Length: 106
Image 1 (cartoon, helix red, strand yellow):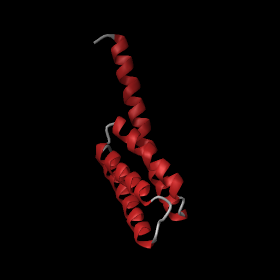
Image 2 (image 1 turned 30 degrees about the vertical axis):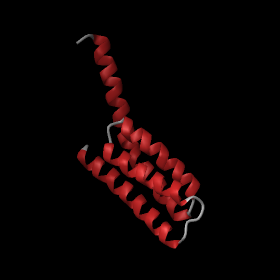
Image 3 (image 1 turned 60 degrees about the vertical axis):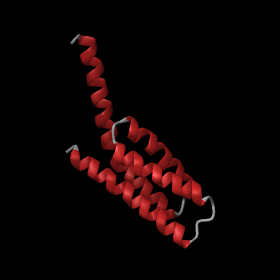
């Protein structure tokens, strides 16, 4: 393995470690947006997490964030109490996946 290959691998490992560390903040953000009822911002955050988690190898986190995003898109702006409860449950599922992923990387 050449020096440049090692450098690239080290950079990728550092980027993944940085992303892993940022997952706690992402979980907090989802919970805070959900608690405030900031549904548009929550959908955007779920969309970003869906893509980025998949790119960094957190498939279960990505899938849970995608399900949250889908639920928010489907609900649109008419979030009645039942839909709101479902969305909050999906937020909890994403946060749980993040915690599980972090526990696996500790």
